[in-house]
Amino acid sequence: MRGLDVLEAVAGGVNSLSELAVTLKLNRSTAHRLAATLVERRYLTFAPRSGYGLGSKSLELGYQARVQLNIPRVAREHLEKLAAQTGDTVHLGVLDGTRALYLDKIPGRRRVEISSRVGELQPLRSTGLGKALLLDEIEARLLDLYRCENGGEQRYEVSESLWLRRMREYAKLGHTFDLEENEDRIRCVAAPVRDATGRIKAAISVSSAAQYMNDERMQALAKEVSWAAQQISRELGWEGPAVSVRKIKSKAA
Picture 1: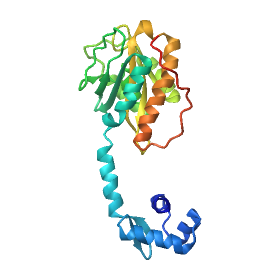
Picture 2 (picture 1 turned 120 degrees about the vertical axis):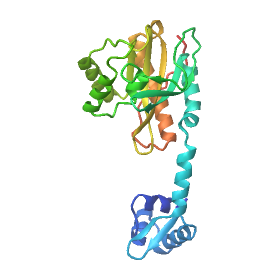
Picture 3 (picture 1 turned 45 degrees about the horizontal axis):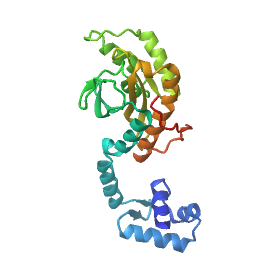
Picture 4 (picture 1 turned 180 degrees about the horizontal axis):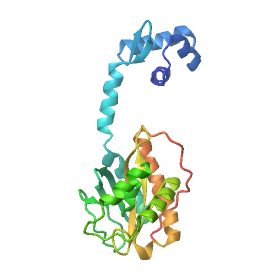
């Protein structure tokens, strides 16, 4: 455990023996012994003038972890739980240029047909999942993305100004809605998934027929979806503030 503490301290910017001893509340000889072992095993490097730094073995493990943290694989268990809790269709998607690419879909228990397919590209501005992928974008970028979908086959009824106002509000709340914007009589609640850097890497959503998704239920679902997105994010290394949500028990209302 102390060896891991040393490794994490160096990763956080502590690079001298004296700083390590003070930070970890160790005597100098113990701190030196632990650090020397990590240098020997290539987890750390040491240079007389610059002190300790992360070594090649740490880089190797970091790369392997990044490869292994496949988003659909990490997310699958959480998506299944969310589908079981809600009884509705759950999606996972990522940004692919100016569209949302659907990576996973778990059908709900209700007799509701959602037309999406895994591997399909969907609009950003009209889908809950697409909007969740854009929550960190600046307004100029949002405008570009909104306008690039003008002239498409699907007519979009939400004006540019109203869409921007909604996106500003969604950014404050941390979740998004699709209010029958992408598919007739289908509503959706979505939230972003973040990686270790805090960047949005994916989004998840719950979709169902409008008859099962009144405003009150959508607000309740926002808590469940945000909670699930947070758990996936934490498995991807995100360490942001915890979302204070009450886990709602499974009810297929």
